[in-house]
Picture 1 (cartoon, helix red, strand yellow):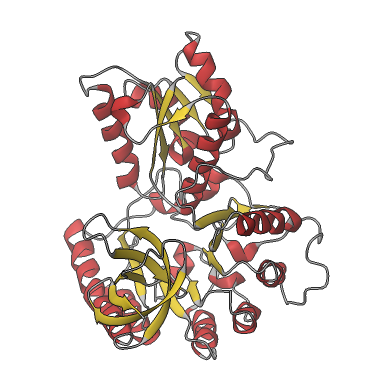
Picture 2: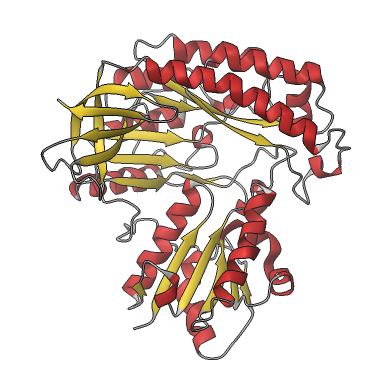
Length: 441
């Protein structure tokens, strides 16, 4: 039996693809192993959103190839594979095959071809028409939390983003397939599902099958209500696109306790001028309308975001507008990135007027503002009781557990009982920079 080690860079969609690949390999008598030293085959599932992630791939291939032990077959999957294709064979030595984002369902047959002696195979073809989305992954990152893709690809074409080229156009999965998967996961003991996609609230299935009888202003808010009706304890979704974020999504959260009170709403910049250059399709005024709707909810909804600093031609005034926005929104957390050009995108052709030092200074300044927001948010939980899904048990000390709240806060807590996989009440005793700490009630 051949042994396979999988390593994943990037977003939840990449993690979901890796789980699907692992399940497929396992069903074809391959053994999934936890470290590369024992592996006959090493698969690296890649991210291309930022240049740093792409460079990490080249470093990892070199490390695996030059480890000094046996020489495993190396396959590159995911977004970098889709974008680079056969050029990867020239950019980094040691890659035996390249498998694009739409071709992961053919991983077993590609590996078998390599085992038969073929080398440097590249498959960037489209997904098979009979691709089985009903398959439940037996190889999951957690027995209690599962990712459920509901939409793939992106039609937005923001000027800085490579995703439409690496993931293709938006394709929504049938609602009845999504609902059936969630029901099956609930029956397997999964406590929390994440409905995932590049833009989940762009969800537009070709048929309404599975959504009959559910009210809602958009297909996505109808899907949220339908998934909530399955009775699974927790439902989260990620990522939302601002111009497709309808107020009825907040109404759906208010109506259903198992729809978690967390919204990730990437703004990218606080300047209308930069947003137009990014081709985001929203203004700060209508973004704030959505934020105000979220903050007016009867439930305390956690709000998180993504922000790019140092976009081409970003002035100090543009950056000041971003700082002002962050201060107003008081995000619970924010993923802040320095702009890096991605070859093939319109922004890569724009004149980059900022030095790396200027970008770094703006990054640090904005991060300091956001740290104050995050500290304030976390401190507000001290001495309160929250419900936490116990996802992992610590090795040392043995009575420590790790999990998330419904609003996606990380909690480390102490329990004398084994509560793994259960949703429990935890009294928060302390808040640190990124984490809450407590004891079970």
